[in-house]
Length: 267
Image (cartoon, rainbow, N blue to C red):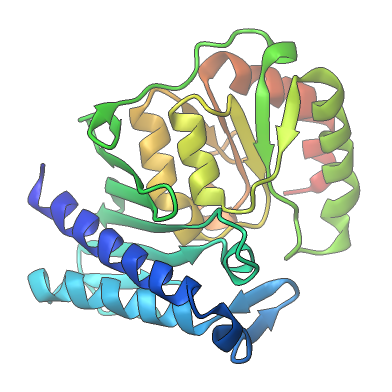
């Protein structure tokens, strides 16, 4: 395992252990939750897990820069770590067991390593550019499903953005329900991306995500043979937060299905 990836794995495991310990004192944590925006919460668990990750990274690479959900940007470097210490905070605060730690590393603007750790299932998704994607050390690939009507699709609701996204999103959701085998909304985008990478989901779409929600999962999907882009097909999804991803066949089928509604979103 590459030394940089090894540090990311170490940091993810330590953060995951922190989250599990905090899960056992949710009643206390809930009394100190802060609201960042509509349906957007931050807890003591987020801050503690983020601190553990940054401390682990800086112990080995003190000169590297950080972009983290809670503490923002720190430092300047060709190496930039993109961190979400707790993706799925709302789930976590309700004891709903779908949340994860997401850590990615960019070098000169290119994603090099990605780690997503699910501490509830103790599943570790990893990828390094050009080296493939793995789940607990086993190589993973996106699904080989070719038929849209047999595919299982993931999504996330556009809760952070204006009402102009709601109507076209609902139209997309209705089409997905009608044309696929089912739609799931687990509530942790980084895990959703990994589920596409390992074939549990055939595709996924969402609007209004943040860079730290997407970065690690995007690399894992690409290394697993999947396609990922903005809803408009562009490669700017890390900046816009609008994402469409899937196995190649289902990706193109979903893009075609949503084409009219994507234009209405005026992304």
